[in-house]
Length: 186
Image 1 (cartoon, rainbow, N blue to C red):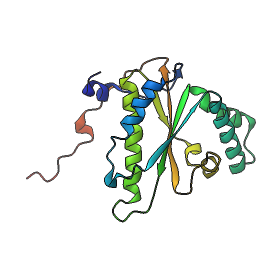
Image 2 (image 1 turned 45 degrees about the vertical axis):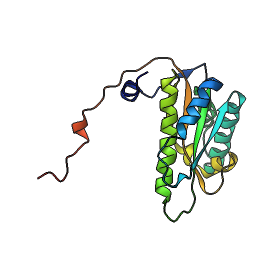
Image 3 (image 1 turned 60 degrees about the vertical axis):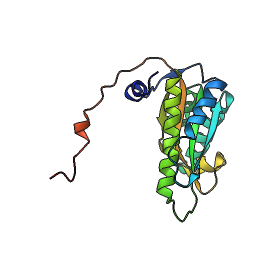
Image 4 (image 1 turned 180 degrees about the vertical axis):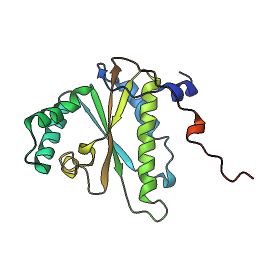
C-alpha cells in the first residue's frame, strides 16, 4: 500500500473478527511505534498485548473496577463491560509512561505516546489488519490502572482493538479548508 493511500483511506473499524495480527505483523506494528516523534528519546510508552483468555480477564478487571467506583451499577452494565474486550481478537493497551524531565514536558511525552499508538494503527492497516482506538471510562479509571499493574506515573491512552473488519466503511474526507486557516498573510 502506498503511504498516501494508507493515510487517506484508513478508517476505524468498530466490528472486528479473527484473525488477530500474526507475530510477523506484530513485529512490524511495534517497530512502527519506535518511529514516533520523541523529543529527548524517552520512549514514554509501553503496550499491553491482550488476546485469547486475557480478553476475558480484562473484562473481569473492568467489572471489578466498575463495582468499586459504583456499587449500585446494574448487572446489565456489568455484563456489557465484561463483554467489551471480546469485540476483537486482540487488544493493545497504549500506556503513556510519564517522567519529570527538564526539557520534555509531560504533554510532549503524552503526544509521543499517542503518535506511537497511531503509528501502530497505520502499520497494522498497511498489512491488512483493521483496528479501532477506544477509550471510555475504563481507560481513565485508576482501579483499572492498578489491576493492570500500571505504575503511578503511567496512564492509559486507549485500547486499540485489532482484527479483521466485518465491513469496510468509506468515510468522506473533509476539505482542508474546514480546519486550516492561513495566518500572518498580508
